[in-house]
Image 1 (cartoon, helix red, strand yellow):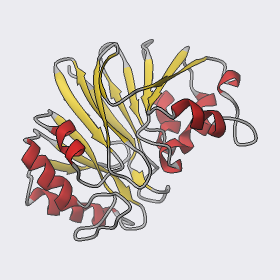
Image 2 (cartoon, one colour):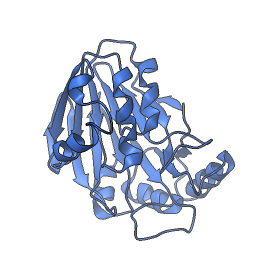
Image 3 (tube, one colour):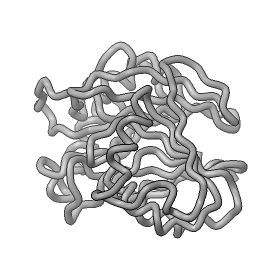
Length: 247
């Protein structure tokens, strides 16, 4: 049995009938790894059935990726380690504090905050991170886990670091906030852009998530994104809340 990946939240920007804001769980033999903390993370307890270390990686600090931190008080864990870019401690000290929410010290378990510079890091597993192209600083991550490589890039437009993180990976989890043909300077991706990059990077499989809640307001719209991407890169799936797969 390989690693299990569960999409807890797949919407970008806000929660809607199509899903919650972004959070993804990677369940490995020795660790739980969570990618981003949108409101999807509120369901995390359901999946934490073993006593394993819990690590949370934040791509950036926009509220759709951090609003779920407000629900950390319901987690039944002994310890949580949160990783992010060099301003992690500065911004979480503001956000996870009164009058907005309970502080980390009030959660009932230990929380560690670890800031990562761009580059390779030897944690309990190997992580390579690089800045992405977004209106505010965002970080992409490439994980080496149990002999497999998984890259997570959200939020970003297609850029050189996006490509670098994605080269030859077993699984690319990539944002797709925009509809086919749509783009702005804000720093997001449409399905054909992500598919073209995945093809160039020789990715084995790609899953699109962070579907903009304003654009993808029905599940049928997500199917359009999937079909569009598959014409360029056939090994593409579009995620939905509750999707689980093994790698």
